Structures are given as C-alpha cells and as structure tokens.
Amino acid sequence: MSTGTPIAEPAGLAAPAGTPALIQEPGTLAAFWRRLRARKSAVAGLVIVGLLILMAVSAPWIAPYDPTATDWANVRGHPSLAHPFGGDEVGRDVLSRIIFGARASLGAGLVSVALAVSLGLPLGLLAGYAGGWIDGVISRLTDALLAIPFLILAIALAAFLGPSLVNAMIAIGLSATSTFIRLTRAQVRAVAAEEFVEAARAMGNPPWRIARVHILPNIVPAILVQATLTIAAAIIAEASLSFLGLGQQPPEPSWGAMLNTAKNFMDQAPWMAIWPGLSIFLAVLAFNLFGDGLRDALDPRQRT
Amino acid sequence: MLRFLARRLALAVPTLILASMIIFALQQLLPGDVATALTGEERDPQVIAFIRQKYHLDAPLPVRYAYWAGGVLRGDLGESIRLQKPVSELIVEKLPVTLELACLAMLVALAIGVPMGVLSAVKRGQAADTIANGVALWGLSVPNFWLGILLILLFSVQLGWLPASGYVSPFESLSDNLAAMVMPAFVLGNAIAAVMMRHTRAAMLGVLGSDYVRTARAKGVSPMRVTLRHALPNAAIPIITLGALEFGQLLSGAVLTEQVFSVPGFGKLMVDAVFNRDFATVQGVVICTAATYIALNLAADLLSAAVNPKLRRA
Image 1 (cartoon, rainbow over the protein chains, first blue to last red):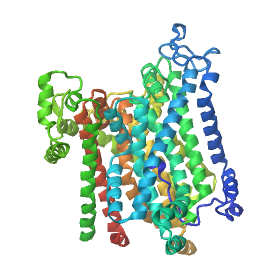
Image 2 (image 1 turned 45 degrees about the vertical axis):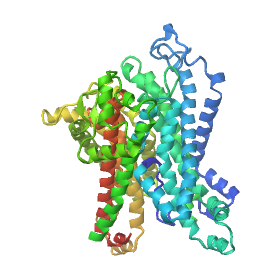
Image 3 (image 1 turned 180 degrees about the vertical axis):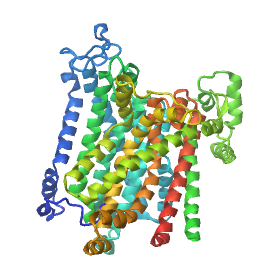
Image 4 (image 1 turned 120 degrees about the horizontal axis):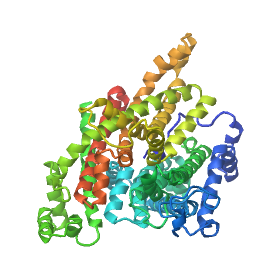
C-alpha cells in the first residue's frame, strides 16, 4: 500500500533546513510537541482532522435537514440559499448528507485501523520477539496477505462477507493488518538488538516484561505514524467500497455512495459529484499531512 | 546468482500457496449454504447439485482445497455460473485490456513522477521542491474514481473532446483506442506518479550526497550533467524495483478506474462478478492478481540483485 509506506531518506537529511535547534532534545513529549507545531502542514492537517471529527460528532445538531428526508421540490435542485450544496436525485439535501457522511468515512477509517493495529501489533511483537518457527509461520502468512493488493483483498472480503458498513470496516481492517505485522516485527527486531534490551535480559526479566516495558514503548512512534497514514488509505478504501455498493447501504449517507449515484447525473447535477469527492479528498489529505508531520517530528529513523 | 534465484523461488512458492489458501478460505465467509451462495441468482436445484458435486462441497475443507488447487494448477479456475463460461477464459479475454491500461498508466506515472522527483531533489528546500511535494500529496490524497468523474465532467460533458466511456480495441482503431484510454490512464497513473516522485526524490538525495558526485562537481562538470549522467543512472535502480512493486497498487486502482470509465478489463470483471455474486470469478481474479504480484516481486528482487551483487547475500 503505497500511501502508507514511509519513504526512508538518507540519515542526516531528514530534518528540513530552518529547524535545527528543535532536534536537540529527542524523546520528551514537550520537545515532540514543539517539533510538530513547527510544521505548518502538520498543524493544518491536525486542525482539519479535528474539525471533521467535530462535524461528524455534532452532525444531528448542525445539519440543516434530515439526511434521508426526500423533498420532491428539491430533486437535483440547484445550489441555493436553502440548500447551499444543492439537492440529490430524490431531493435530499446534499449538505446534510455530506455532514452525516463524515460519520461513515471517519468511523470506517478509525475503526478499521484500530482493528488492524489490535491484530497486527501482537502478532508482529510475537513474530519479532519469539523468532524461530513462530516467526516463520507469521511472516509467511504476512507475505501471502501482502501478495494480494490492499484494495482487491478488501473488495473480495467485503464481497464474501456481504455488503454493509460494518463488513466494509472489517474487510479494510483485515486487509491492512499485514502492514502492521510486518512493521511491528521489523521494529521489534531492531529494538531487541539494542544493548539496553540485552541488559534487561541479563538481569533476568521475563520475556513478556521485556516486550511490554522495554520494546513496546520504543516502537510506538513508528506504529503511530503508520496508523495515521493508514487511516487516510482506509478512508479512500471505504469510499471505494461504498462507491462499488459494498459499504454503507442506501439511504444512509456515505461520501463514496453519493459519488456512485452522482455519476449517473453528471450532466444535469454536477454538484452531486463535486462535494462528496471534495470531502473525501480533504479528509484523506488531512490525515496524510498530519501523518507526514508526525513522522518528521517523531523521526523514528534517528532512534535506530 | 543461481543460488539466490533458487532461494527466492523457494520463498515465493509457499507464499503463493498460502495466498491461494486464504483466497479459497474466503468461501467460508459466505453466509448460509455454500452451494446455494455460489450459484448466486440461479435457484435451479440441478445447478446447485452440479456445483455441490463440482466443488466437492460434501468433502472436508482440506480435501476441497486440494481439489480446487489442483484445478487452479491445471488452469481450471472454476465456472462463472452467470456467464456460463470458464473463469480462466474470461480472465484471458479481459487481461490484455487491463495490461494496456496499466502500461499506459505506468508511462504517465514515470513521465510525471521521475522528472518531478529529480527536480525536487536537486532544488531541495526551494520553491520547486515544495511545489513537487504538494503535487505528490495531491496525487496520494485524491480518490481516483472522483478524479475520473471530474475529468469526464470537464473533457466529455463540458468540452466534448474525449469519450466518457466505451472501449475500442487497438487493432480496430488505434486512435479511437487511445482517445478512450487517455483519461483512464491519467487517472490511474496519477497516484503512482506521486509515489514515483517520492521514491525518485529519496533515491536522488541519497546519490547526490555521495562522494563521487562531489568529485564530479569538484572537477567542474556542469550541474545538469552531474544530475542526469552521474546521479540519475545510479538512482534508477531503486526507482525501477520500487516501481515494479507499485504494480499491485496499479491493479487495485484499475478496479475503480475501469468501473468509472466502463473499460471492459480485469477490474470491471471483478466488480461485475461481485455485483452478480459470481464468487468463482472473484476468486479467479484475486488469485491471478496475487500470482502476478508475486512474480513481479521476484522479478524486482532479481533485477536489483543482478545490478547490485551485495544484495545477493540477503
């Protein structure tokens, strides 16, 4: 999955010019926050994400109309004062559907990535720390899953599970799991080779304690960056599945599903296609910006 | 090199077998009776009985997998109940269309991504770098089916320059074929262009920082020549191998792109099969995709090992 892959820059070139003083104290939360704030694009991403979440949560209070209420006077209605984003093919208010649609998109992004992390993190820890045949089995399984392109696996899973928003979340989450297994495994192996882990082992700490206390905290930054970027990919995936009719079912609003119907009315009601697409783009862009900024601010490459 | 090849093949084969098991196991997710579900819209008891017998649905799961995998190895991917055709025949029929689309898209991606990546690496931290990074971020964030809809809106509905859909075989009319493919290829190539730009930038930054480039600069070689003759060829290896891996992304993207532009390829076959609950076809398409991806992965590994002997030990 390309959107989620951090591209490694050669060591020493990671910090952009103009912020040298901020790289001095790695590790502390305050220093991290300062480095993150220094990146305008990351802050912009975070603000947009925050606003979108606010919009999704407060949808019932801020949406001007019921998102599923049809109005025959507003069928493919032009954008107007009463309906700023126009009306759809059965006269539903497009603005209200955009506002409520944020719930499906952000919900799917967050839930599916939470699923992928909660499956991928333990499996990756196990593979990376236990090694031996356990690692062999988990790694081969990960390779096999990664051999099926992300979206194709998600579509196939959703097709066999049956079309619904919950199944789409499960399908996307399972499809993204392999990325987290592989990342966690690689990170664990890098950290486990460090001297402080060896010292902890020499002091007689049990393996599970070393994994939890010494390894896990050190791999969190990389997982966090990957999770943020994967949310962006998952939002596109949910929109794609809904666009294909495999996600949110009508009449409940979803940006992807709105685009699917909009496709048939392009010459008469182009606004039906503009707003949902713009919303997906904005949400994905925000998570990508925030993820990129997070990666630069945490800079896991300088730790290993 | 031969030992490296053997080792890599020894890894690829179990991966493919495991992937086929996962794809086979998808059937188990179907709600209710598998035979009834596999027949889709068809409710004829005779057809259901035929399916039950053909896929040995009364046998235990491992036995069923063995029958299915044996068929796949012989090129038998099952029957499309709806189209009354072998799945393998459908795939062979649709594959060339998607391959054409994928190749054109790759061309677009390289033509946009590589120059942009080189430029942003050379002008690191300057305005051109910022703009190139912005364009890449756009490419990664815009949903390609929406971009497709926007292009249709502009070039087909408003301007009337290009057909919104419809596919013409290049053997019938090459110009009509290209006219129908230009928008899908651009839409599909757009996201990959962003990835190629990032790969190119990272690879170029690595090479530009190396000693021999500094030596070349010190000798007074012109900046243009240093970039294009000294740095780019060495940066090209990771670009090519990483590019090969983007092919999986290309196949994923093709599913939606073909749907938007009604291009009768591999992806449209899969989506139509999903809509018609034609599960044998879905499985067939997925396993072909996985096999293609594993083969490309292998090819990319071999290519990098052929160029860089150090990698052969890995």
